[in-house]
Structures are given as C-alpha cells and as structure tokens.
Image 1 (cartoon, rainbow, N blue to C red):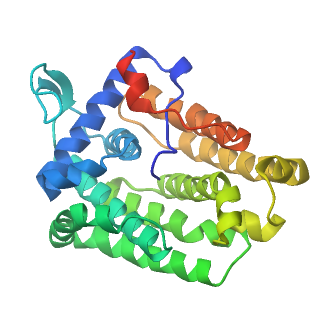
Image 2 (image 1 turned 60 degrees about the horizontal axis):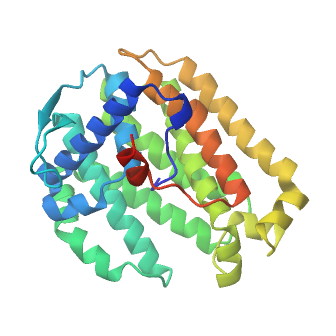
Length: 291
C-alpha cells in the first residue's frame, strides 16, 4: 500500500482530519505494543486508513485521549487508544514493511540495512499473529511467481495483492466480514498494485524490471504511454472505482463514514490523476504541520 492511499484534503472535514491523525498515532502505539519501538519507524498512513475502515465496519468504537508520545514529549495530542484491532494492525504494518523491504532486496535495490530494524518486530508479530504472517507470506510468494512468469495481464498481475487484502480483511473482521467487504478490499488491493506499477512505469522500463504496463505497451515515456493507451488506462481505473463505489454502498457502517468515503471516493481518484500526470507525491506530514 505504502503511500498511495490518501485523503482528499480540499474535501475533508476538520473533524475527520483530527480523527485520521489520532488513528495514525494510535497505530504507532499499536506497533510499539505488538512489535517494539524500533518497528514504529515503519509507520504508514495506509494502515491508519485501514484502522478507520475496519473499526467502523466491525463496530468497534475508537476511544481518543490526549497523551504524549515518543515524538511529542512535551505537548499532548489526541491519540486513539490501543485496542485489540489496533494492536493487530500494528503487527500487520510491521509485517508488510518487512516483506516490502525483502522484496526490494530481492529486486537488487536498497532495503537490506533498513530491514534489520524490523527483523525483531517481525519475529514478534509472527509469534503473536501467525495467521497474518501466513496470509502475507503466501500471497507475496504468489505475487513473486506471477512476476517471474512476466504476466502481462493486469488482472492476473494484480490478483495476488488483491486476494491478500481480501484475506487480511476477512481475518481482521471475523464474523463482521461479508461478500461486500471482501470485494471492497479486493478492489483496494488491486488498485494499490496497479497504481504502483503505473507510477514506476518509466523507472521499471529503464531498469528492465517486471511491470505489466511495460509488458503490455512497451518501453516509453509516461506522456507517450498516455497518448498511446490513455483511454484504456482510464477505463481500467474507472472500472475499479465503479466496483469500489458499488461495494462500499453495500456495507453497513456503525459510525460516521465521512473519513473513509473521502479517502476511497475522492482520495484514490485524486492520487490516480497525480500518478498519470507524473507529479511528485505530497508529504502528508509536512502538509499536516501547516494545518
């Protein structure tokens, strides 16, 4: 997921921004409780989104208190209290970061040094939440197999990541899971994989790395890709957004859904437009400091 799942700030209510920040800090504390303080270095906004979505679907009320944290030792900030779901998400954050860095190492990129910081946390997550690790490990291996086969099909290329997100949501939601939640998370996983591939299109082409867009359309600039296949790519993502909207509408939410609706219905299309234009990703932490 790592960095692509974002809110649409111009259409985000202040109350939801404050909730998002509190959930982000809550996941950070959840990582510390589940995997140790070193693993908190891998905290992502994407898992804060999962916290908002899963708490709401599961009907688990988020309790927020003003407290200190490792980064803010003087002033207290609103922080979501760590419950069982938050702790499991903290473990999942660490597992995903560890496997992402492992994938980077296997691809010949960086990550070997950084991965050391998460090794102990990963072992703690594996001991306490073996099913989460089993799910991620199985689908990451399937993803690797698909990529080694150089599959050009977008659906097949994204299927392991999409199925991983579905399986993780089923595990975390338990009896609250449904066909609609499974399809929603499947669509989210598929979008994350494809938007990452599109974002890396030019880089993967230069470095001769696996990328379904490169295999389907050839090595060229992003501008040339959109000129050649822009309609097809827009249709690919518009179909995904339609599926996300349809399944989101079928899911009963216990609490206010403004935050997650903003991210799924507005944030994902906005991020897709950014990637298609080749614009740099905005740093949410720097942006938040100005609010």
